[in-house]
Length: 100
Image (cartoon, rainbow, N blue to C red; front, side, top):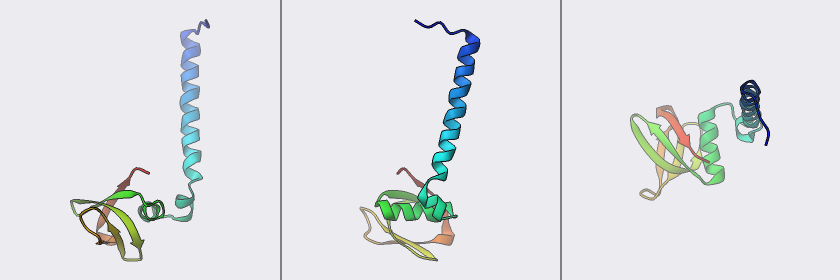
C-alpha cells in the first residue's frame, strides 16, 4: 500500500484538476459544429437537426421542446409529440438547451 503525504495528495489533486480543465477546453475546440458555426444558438439548432435529437427552445417566457426539422435566416421549424409543425422566429428566442 502506498502512503501519500498530505502535500503529495494536494499536488496530485491539483494536477488532476488542471488536466481535466485542459482536456475539456481542447475537446470543445475540436467540435465540428462550433468550429463551422460562430453563433452557438444556431449551432445547437443545427446539431439538433443533424442528430435528430430534441432541444428546448426558450422564447418569451415559454419553453418549447422539439426536434429541429429546418433552419433558415429568420425561422426555426420543428416538431414534437403534440404538433407536427412548430415555427419560431429566431429573433424571439432567448435561449436553447440541449443534451446531446
